[in-house]
Length: 191
Ligand code: AP5
Picture 1 (tube, rainbow, N blue to C red):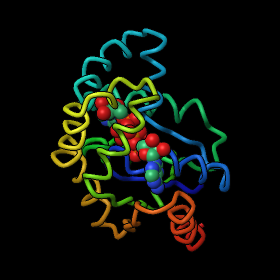
Picture 2: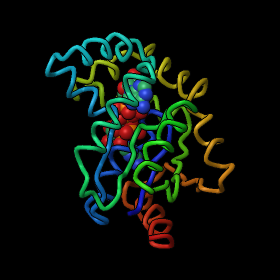
Picture 3: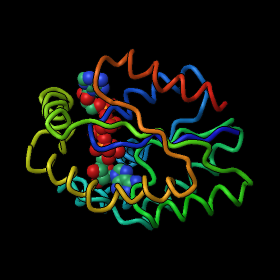
Picture 4: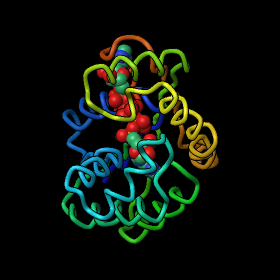
């Protein structure tokens, strides 16, 4: 069982690089953003609650997200490892994830942290917003609110795992291929 957190601010390339990593290593992709968007599409009560936060660029409450992650892990008992993308995003989520993993005698093996300048993040997200239909990408105010939430609440995640020496910083600018090569080198050193 190999568990990876792909960490970074909105637009840093977590989703893009997750596709490469799950294809190469066979990990189960767990993207809380994708799970929440699926709940919104299905118009579930959870989705309706989450939408009001996501549309404003705010984090969805911890209890909602943690419950969803636990259900997803229960639904994938055969996974040979999870790639956590967009989770955990607060210290409370880190503590909850530790508990979820310990129940299964697993742990986080490494946190690969993509580093990208704010100007590049905004450029990428506005670029995607022009075509993707993602409502939180079309408005620069919402994009900047997401980045602010990251600074206010999510950078604590990196500090949490740094105390266990689990964080490796990866330059997240350059071609998708060159960034993947750097991620792969760190994966191969540990798997
Ligand atoms: P989520 O879906 O997780 O979005 P995000 O973190 O804002 O991240 P993005 O998907 O926008 O960016 P990414 O880092 O995956 O980059 P990507 O590869 O897509 O969360 C959305 C919302 O859901 C949150 O705001 C929150 O409300 C809620 N939420 C989710 N999880 C939560 C949690 N745990 N707790 C509470 N709330 C939660 O790339 C972005 C763009 O850049 C793409 O167009 C891509 O093609 C491009 N790109 C990628 N790599 C490169 C490159 N190397 N060069 C140029 N362009 C690139």
